[in-house]
Length: 348
Image (tube, rainbow, N blue to C red; front, top):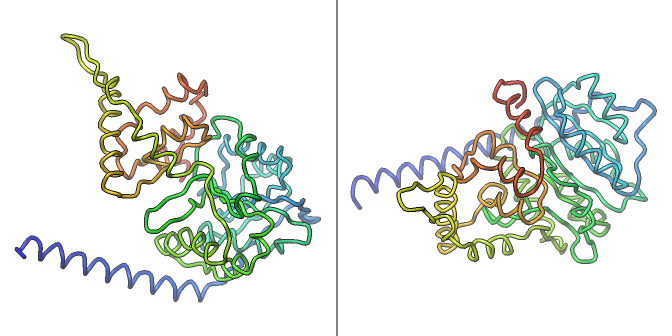
């Protein structure tokens, strides 16, 4: 082993030790914090819930609510579901509150303790879910842009005869799991010991890495260990099959003396990278790496992190607005407005 290999090995050992220490400290601190952080409940006379409930988790530094979220929440409510808006902001813009109360069964305002899973646990216990007549509980959050198309057909696909727990997308990164920005639990799931045990065990740990590893990945694994069937509406296998069928030739058509379109080149490079990852059995993140295939398959969202930060350096995201406008007939203007707000620091 040469010097460079020894240094890399030493760095991995040090990094693993630091991560383990961080997770251990987060676990200790999380157990010292009170998981119940709700400070305001609206309406004052109480929150009445129907048989199908959505716990919609929100956070914004100033308590603002993005315009597109009213559309998303409105469509969830129009499907016959009782939406409870749970904000971790500690406050809520008064105008937004009035608009939300016209759409939602209720609002819970809580301190930003425990990230999304802390908020969902707090809401489940505050609302005493599942109640006697509860048939479905959906956890959702505002980490997406959209919907860029109506979600009614998506919601109709939640078939609890086929699976007990549904996500929109699934990932094999770290370990198999449904991605937690939208997970729906059917009648069998919400009354299972696995459901109760998982949520009662969620602690408000002050570490995003802890929450992702322990709860986003752990939720699906806990449901599987509890004997529940889990599935994704846009399965990983179906999406990766599309990659292997992609034709590269159209992206290399260059007229004599001309230049390739930059978007075509980045698309070509992206497909090559995806095919290489699939061949090497390296797991992809569907909501970033496969964003285009998702949208063209009827998926209604784009991840906020992808457009704001593009942390995994997805090559072909630059023409997302063109794809919405030209291929889906959707208006990218609301997303562009939200992005401008973020870049100005008006939103997280």
